[in-house]
Image 1 (cartoon, rainbow, N blue to C red):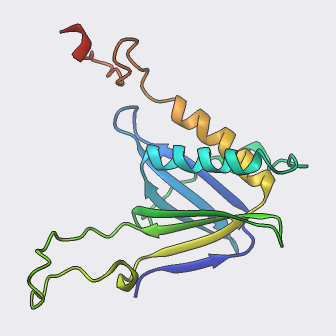
Image 2: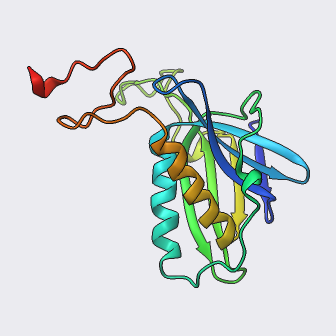
Length: 178
């Protein structure tokens, strides 16, 4: 049985990294009921969450309060619950909260569909037992998450002015300078 957590109220929802630029590992982290839960993810997934939350919040009243800045710092993630796969995001008008649904990435084997007796055949997506964390965050938490995540994303390696690829500390083989 995979991990399954559902929280109607969380104390913290944040992101952060471990490692040097170019070697960073991204995490999403939430704290609920006094316990922190970490999920390993990709920078692009964090950016996609920010983009969606910003788009939804544009049509909502501005948040009235802000979490304390220190509350958004990533604590030692330890062993993550899982590696992030599918992401579900939404807005629940009845409780004025944004839904964040994080599901586990499950690698699948490429199997020919014409072999129904193959024991390694991948089950349909709705039959896969994925780890699952579902949480509701306030508009204030969402806004603070977005600002913090944008700073984390921008703190990585600078982009090349010609090709927009990241520049490593030891140089950059720019494909446009060839």
